[in-house]
Amino acid sequence: MLIDSHTHIDTDRFEGDREAVIQAAIAGGITRMVDPGCDLPSSQAALALAKAHPGVVFAGVGVHPHEATTYTPEVENQLREMAREPEVVAIGEFGLDYFRMLSPRDTQRSVFCAHLQLARECNLPCIIHVRDAHEDVMELLRAHGQGLRGVFHCFSGDVAQAEECLAFEGFMLSFAGPLTKQGNALPDVARIAPLDRILVETDSPYLVPKPLKVRRNEPLFVKHTAAKLAEIRGMTLEEVAQVTTANAVRLFGLGEKQA
Image 1 (cartoon, rainbow, N blue to C red):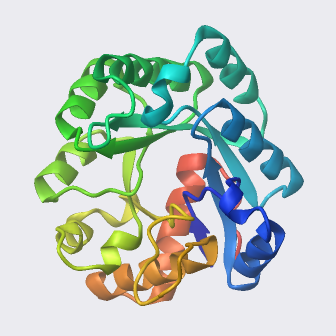
Image 2 (cartoon, one colour):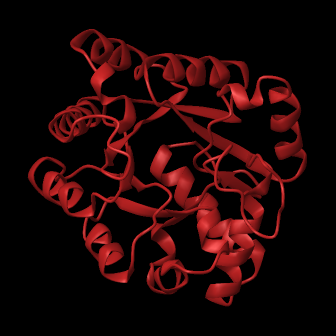
C-alpha cells in the first residue's frame, strides 16, 4: 500500500473523470493522497475534495511561487481559517521558482517567509517547491524555518543539495517521476537519503514516470516511482511502500497506518 504524498487532482485536467481516477488509485493500493493548493481557489478545491473523500484525500493550503503576487493579507487569513479544518494536513505548496520567474523574486521571498510563519502558527508541515532557487531557500529556512517540519516536494537537486536539505531535521525529500528517468542525480540522492526521510509522489497531472507513455499522470502511477526507488535501494516494492507510508503518516499526521 502506498501514499501519493503530492497530487493535484483538484485541477481541471481531472474534470471529466476525477472520481474514477480516485477509485482506480484506491483499487490499485494507493490508500491515501495529499492534494496541495497552489492558490486560494485551488486550496479551497483541495479542501472540498478532502471533505468529499474522508480518510483518503487530504489537503494542503498555500500559494505557489508562480502565484505569489496573489498573496494578500485577506488570502492569508482565509488560508489560516482553512488550516483549522481536520482535512488540512500541510501548508503548501509554496516555495521559490526562479526558473520561470512568474512572480518577482522579492515577492516570492516575502511570500515564502509568510508561509513559514503560517506553518509555525498552525503547527503544520510545509510542502516546499524549489526550482533553480536552492541557495535562497536554504538561506530563508535557516533564518526563519528553524524547528519547522515538512517536505521538499519533487526533489530535483544533487547529493550536496540533498544533504543541505536533510540538515533540517524535520524535513523529508520526496521523489517523483524524474527518478525514473536518466540525466539527473536523483538515483545518487535516493541511495544516500535516510529511509525515514523519504516520500514518493506523482505531482500529477505532471511528471509521468517511465515506462508509461500517457499524457496525464495520476495517483495510481506513484507505484512506478516507488518501484524505481526499490530497485535503487535494493529493496522490495513492499518494503518501500511500508517505509514511505509510515513516513507520510508521521509527517502529515494521517492517523493510524493502514494495512
